[in-house]
Amino acid sequence: MPEGDSVYQATARLHQALAGQVLLRSDFRVPALSTTDLSGYLVKEVRPRGKHLLMRFTPPEDHDPAFKKPPLTLHSHLLMEGRWDIYAPAERWKRPAHTARVVLGVESATAVGFDIAQVKLVPTENEDELIGHLGPDLLGADWDPQLAARNLRSQPERSIGDALLDQRIMAGVGNIYRSEVLFLARLNPLTLIGQVVNLEKVVQTSQRLLEINKNRPRRVTTGLARTREPYWVYGRTGKPCLRCGTRIQQFTLESQSSGQDRDCYFCPSCQS
Ligand SMILES: [Zn+2]
Image 1 (cartoon, helix red, strand yellow):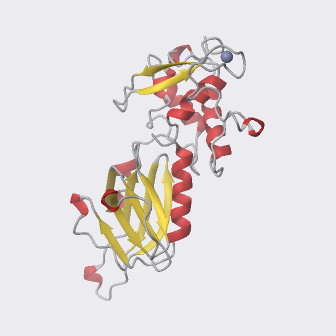
Image 2 (cartoon, rainbow, N blue to C red; image 1 turned 120 degrees about the vertical axis):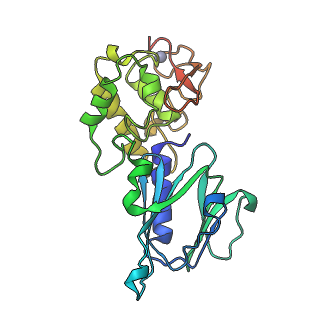
Image 3 (cartoon, rainbow, N blue to C red; image 1 turned 90 degrees about the horizontal axis):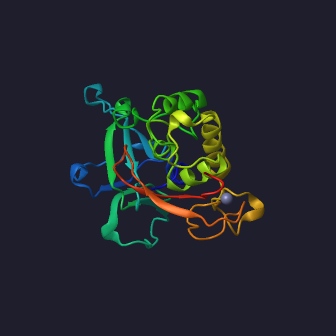
């Protein structure tokens, strides 16, 4: 599952490569959009919303207002395997062509979405159908920590470890940050939300970690001095805790929201 900061970086690269340019070519290799052609549309912008990527297009000018087309938004979600690459027009792709789902070409670049599980095209005014369920965006201009804390508090019987991945509560935390945030907040992942005294700190820590990493090429939660050990607990099963030396443990945490169970890492001493 990608983290919000990876999606933020992917959208920034796409925006840089495409925004302000007219599409010369579009090729959708998903059944629902196989006949769609966006050539002539202007790429207005590419923006992240939590872990969702929104590419907004302005339609070509039409002399006959009766045929006026609406602005469109291409929505994609990278899920586990998906990624967007950007190539020079004649450059050879680094991934197998049969895994490409979307190809968008402007004069100076070609953007290719590989293995993207969810691709949808909607009128921009209907974007909310796709992203309206999301809670406040940790890296968004409208980030609202009080609302995020309220959303958490409204589910007292749920474990904090499960809730942090629920994008309806707040959008942007993936599996890596979940483990790291809970370590920094000294919370066992199975602690029920109703028993967490300082939910604001959990929310603030999540936002701070994403914010400091949003433009970094390599994610680090332990601080710059520790780049050899970028994470406190994530992926460190059996290794000594960087704070207390206890061996880090891992277990699979059931997810109520996504139905996808993910490994969670924690220090049994620091997070007891
Ligand atoms: Zn520890």
